[in-house]
Every structure is written in C-alpha cells, then in structure tokens.
Length: 453
Image 1 (cartoon, helix red, strand yellow):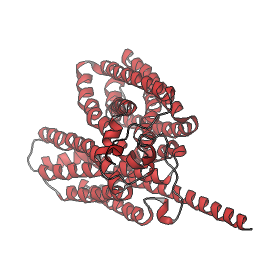
Image 2 (cartoon, rainbow, N blue to C red; image 1 turned 60 degrees about the horizontal axis):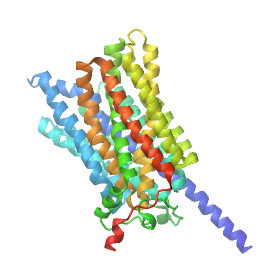
Image 3 (cartoon, rainbow, N blue to C red; image 1 turned 180 degrees about the horizontal axis):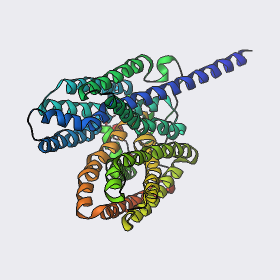
Image 4 (spheres, helix red, strand yellow; image 1 turned 120 degrees about the horizontal axis):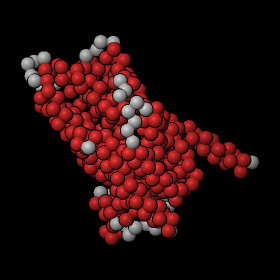
C-alpha cells in the first residue's frame, strides 16, 4: 500500500511538472513575441517618424540617413554588445530576473521614445531599448536549463524559437492594422509598450526560476557539459571562470563561427528579400512583402522539425543536420547567383523559401540547445550570450552594409554568389564540428573554477 501511495505521489508530481513546464514555455513564447512589438515598431513606422521630423523644416533625405546611422546601426551594435554581458549577468543573477528586467526596460524606453521629439532623445531611447532587450533571450535560456532535461532541449528551444519568427510577423501585422486605422507613430509606440507591460504582469505573476520553487523535482542537465559536475550548480560565483572554461573548448569557438555565418545569411535575407524581389524579379512592393513572409513561415517549420529530430538523433545527428542544411543552402545560393530570374517569380520564391527552410533550423540550435549543452545550468546563458553576440556583432554588419554595397556594385547575382561563398566557408566549419562530435563524447574542459577552488 505504501508503495502504491508513493507511486501515486510520484505520478502526480510528474504530471504537475509537465503542466508547469509547458506553461513556462507558453509564457516565454508570448513574452518574447511581445519584445518584438517594441523592436519591429521602429522599422514599421520609420517613414512616419521621418515625415514628422521633416515637418519641422528638416531635409527628409538627411533625416533618413541620420536615423539609419544613429538608430538602426547603433541600435544593432547595442544589442550585439549587450549579448556578451547579458549572458554572464543572467548566470550570476538568475534567468527570471533578467528576462523580466529586459521586458520592463523595453516598456520604459519605448515610452521615452514615444514622448521624444528630437534625434538625441530618439537615439538614447532606442539605444537603451536594444541594450536592455539583450537580456531577454539569455534569461529564457537560463530558465529552460532549470525546467527541462537535456534530452528535450532541442524540441523545447524549437518551440521557443517560434517567438522570434512568428512574433516578428505578428507584431508587424498588428502595427500595420494600427497604421490602417489612422494612428500616428507615437500612439503605436504607446500601444506596443502597453501590450508588453500586460505581458510583463502575466509573466511576473506566473513564471518561476525553477521547479524547486514549487516543490517539484528539477531535471538534470547534460552530463557532457564543459563544467562537468559543476554544470548542475546554477549559481556561479563570478563570470571570469565561465568565460575561461568556454574559451578552452575548440568546439565552442567552432559554434561561434557557425553563428557568424548563419546570422549573416539570416539577416541578409530578412533585410533584403523584398528589395531583391522588387529590383531583380519585378514584383510589386505588396507582392514582395507577402513573399518575404515565406522566410519566417518556412523558418518556423524548420525549427520545429529540427528540434524534433535533434532530440531523437542526439548531438551527432544535430551536427549532421547543421552540415547538410548549410551545404544545401550553399547550392541554392549559387543557383540564385548564377541565374537571372526576371519574369520567373515562382522559381525565385521557391529558392528564397528553401534558404529559410535549410538555414533557420540549424541556426536555432546554436544559441539554444547547443548553448545549454556547453554550459549546463551553470554557464548556459553565458555560452548563449557569447555565441549570439558574436553572430550579431559581425554578421549584422555584413548583412546590412556589405550586402547593400555588393548589390549596387555587383548586382543581386554577385551579392548572392558572395553569400554562397560565406555559406561554403560556414559549411567547412560545420564539417569540422561534425567530426568533433562524432570523434568522441565531449569530455568536460579543464574547468577554470576548479583552479580557484
């Protein structure tokens, strides 16, 4: 009888844990999608802001350039640099605290932007917004490391990754409807801040750092993490040993290079697909906008499929998926660069959609499941911040400025051939990473924290 009671209690605890796990995932997906309301609002209302500033007698073209430099470019740099610090802050202070701080900060800085009326205020507000938002993703990584077993990292992070794919699309759709309703950009920014504030209240009330806070068992991390047994301890004393331990792993640096290549390719297509479809294929602006929506849509399918396969095939299978995806994307990019598709929009659409399907799934592994495998509960957020920051800091610059310059100097075919070269180089790194994963189980790196113990 006692054994039956114990089994019943164990089953009840397991059932409660599963419910709370998926509630936690749902809260993070909704919350991070809300981040995009306070991120996509700038690009969606940029022409309205330019018109507003030009109405005071300024030169419209000059205003556009200044906003591009001081808001868009500087904001991207702030987000990238913030990632490096955000990961370690999250491991030191906790995932829930930093995730909620990023959300609250985005609300505050979006409100400041809405109240501003000059370039200095806009710059300060947008820089602060992008910097504080860098806390969001590492915060979710830390929470995930506490709530889920390593055997389900890929599936869970695949679902959470939908937040930045479909969240961006949903945010832009909502903002578009507000513009159609006749609202000005200040009202749109205020509504974006208001919606995110509501999501903050819901998350603050319901989300927890770990199952232990509710008396539930905490799943174990990957035993092959770089910190060994210390990987189970979510409370490191300082950031230095975390960075030193990760830096000793060649596989970790290979993943940073993969992040650079895949972020460049992802950002290039996210930023320039509509322009390519209008300039080179001859689509209307409306048709190009609808076609560009295929990228996040197919990307969402890709991350779910990659997550499902990743948990079933293990890390060697995951490394194989990364290599195959990048290698096939290289061929597709070569096809785009070697053929003119003017008057053949269907073929161009298929190839653009194929790029999304082949790349976004592998991309989602890097600052997700692979970061958790490297860092465990102790340094997973730090690993995520470095990997993501490395990709954004360098990849976003290449994808933005360099692709624009290449498309002007070499035409879109030349730009795609250059991107094919980047994909090919990334595939070589992916091949090395696969060999590393197949060669032997990853032994914990010499942990810097043990030296100071």
